[in-house]
Structures are given as C-alpha cells and as structure tokens.
Length: 184
Image (tube, rainbow, N blue to C red; front, top):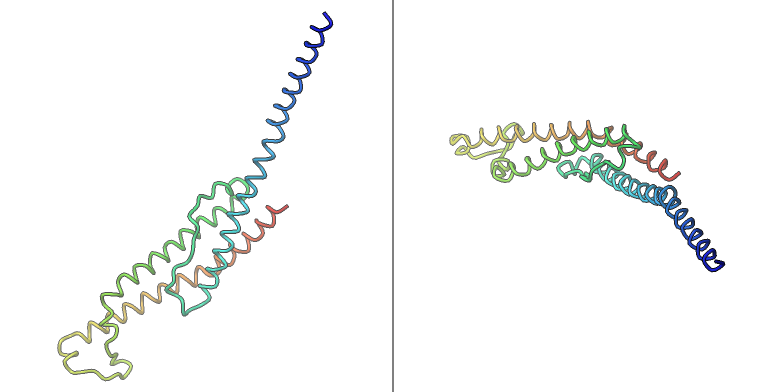
C-alpha cells in the first residue's frame, strides 16, 4: 500500500505542477510574450514611418526635387490601431494624400516625354528668337500652350507639396511621441 500511495502522491504532484505550468503559461507567460512581440512590431512600424516622413520632409523642403515621388509604407496599420487610433487615422489620410501626389507626378512624367520637343521651342514671351516657319505652321502656338499647361501642372504639384509639408511635419512629431510612448 505504501508503494501505491507514493505513486499516487507523485502522480498528484506531477498533475498539479503540470496544471500550474499550463495556467502560468496561458495567463502570464504567453500574453507577456505576445505583448512584447506586438510592442516590437509596433516600434518597427513606427520607426519605418518616422524614417519615411524624415525623407519626405527633406524632399518637400527641396524645390529642385519637386518631381521626385514621396515614400510611403503600404503595410497595414492594424497593429497601431488599438493603441494609437487618432495617429492611425492621420497616417491613413496622409497616405492617401501622398499617393495622390505621387500619381500626379507619375502622370506628369508620362505625359511630358512625348511633348518634350514642343517644350524646347523658343518662347517669344521671353524675347527668344524663332524661325518664321514655326509661327506659320502653328507649332509655336502649340508649344506655348503646352508650356503653359506644363507650368500649371507644376504649380499644382507645388501646391500639393506645400499643403503636405505641415501635415508631414505634424505626423513626424506625433510618430516620434508614439515611439517614445512605446519605449516605456
């Protein structure tokens, strides 16, 4: 009977220890591991956005590079949505604005290539000389209209970029604050 009771006690202790390990793992260790993993993924996403917005600020501030496309991270923002919902809303809106600007810049690049010859024509409004044949054939007028169109398109790009600059600056500040909060 003594051997049976020892085996019974050993089995009970083993079952209790297993039960405690399962409870501990389920209620403490696993959630803690998941929280640590989620925090690391949120930090990585925030760091990527901060890097992208820093580069975008540099591009937006440089007028000579106005036809370069801005950088945007297309990964889902689900990881941030629960903890930083207002930030995610701003990030989503800005993502749309940047995509719109990038689309306009891409269309500009696509449209400009075939009409480059007209854009290189002399501009009589600036006092540049031209051959009379250009005026007679109507090519000069076409060139002038295309230059005006190009100038208007560039003005639209510049206006979009000017509108984006404070938004990107504000978002970068908020992203830095969110990353600092994640570090705690």
